[in-house]
Image (cartoon, rainbow over all chains, first blue to last red; front, top):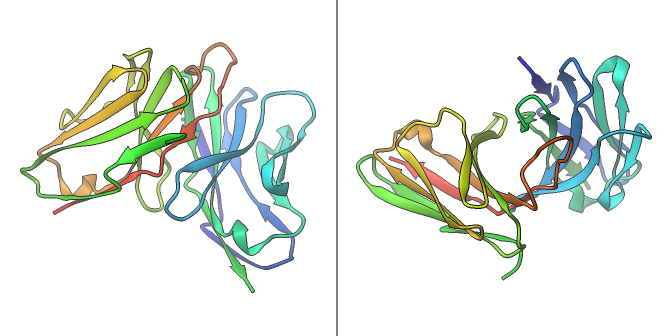
Amino acid sequence: AQSVTQPDIHITVSEGASLELRCNYSYGATPYLFWYVQSPGQGLQLLLKYFSGDTLVQGIKGFEAEFKRSQSSFNLRKPSVHWSDAAEYFCAVGLDSNYQLIWGAGTKLIIKP
Amino acid sequence: ETGVTQTPRHLVMGMTNKKSLKCEQHLGHNAMYWYKQSAKKPLELMFVYNFKEQTENNSVPSRFSPECPNSSHLFLHLHTLQPEDSALYLCASSQDPPAGGRWDEQFFGPGTRLTVL
């Protein structure tokens, strides 16, 4: 069955440090890839998405992600995190087979002052 | 109001109660969704509506009953719930549902935190 894995449940980084959140998926074809962020008490917000073309995509709030077909990965990065980035981040994969999003379990980002 | 709103934000109910969750989207979208979010687990898609018609029901128990009277409003009627149904219930909308390589951004409400005693 198709699945999305976010191997890190929690990640703690210092403010100003760089960030990389990992996402791996299992699916034969190239899926549609998404990263969403959920701040405390709020709904999920789309950060960025990849459908085709340039494998490095830019999103909102200074985030970017890179699709690597050979590794079945779509990792999210930010060069310098801010305290306001503390939130939970979700990777999701869209499948044309059933037109549903398959979600990872999320990674909670904690920022150290 | 803008975006997607959900009421109530918190709900505590007994196993024999009947309650309803309400979702309203002010974005002019055609598709609406109910998701269940449990701690440490991936989001689970429950129902999808397109132009008020239900297009997906992911084997959700009948104690959850959705209703979509128009493309702006979505309800989730709850009855005879179990403690394991305690979760955050998220409503979302998108311009259109996914189809043929088109995946519109889903806009989420803040959710209803449901506790079943």
